[in-house]
Image (cartoon, rainbow, N blue to C red; front, top):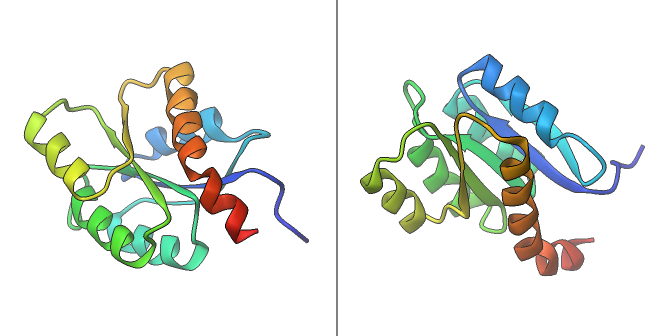
Length: 134
């Protein structure tokens, strides 16, 4: 059965509540949450397999943190946009994430309007890629 039309999104966050809230905000007609992971290692493996259009990636995770995962995603899935999920506004971390290829940030605590606006802006940048891959 073909996947529903929309932009595919994968969530990587070690906090179950955060994943659930993001999933509830994101899932709809425009966005299809195709999976999630609770750590960087399994998240990276599943993202490589599922090849989502957008990954929502927590920065602070035990073990393989979000910046490590971001570097690997950009190497192996260069057309996948990565939105960093964070509760911190640490300037050095934000600058590093941008230098590593992050497409944007989703700040905690979540505001559904801002999350969807961030996804909309990111998806608009992906449109040429999305059309060429269909």
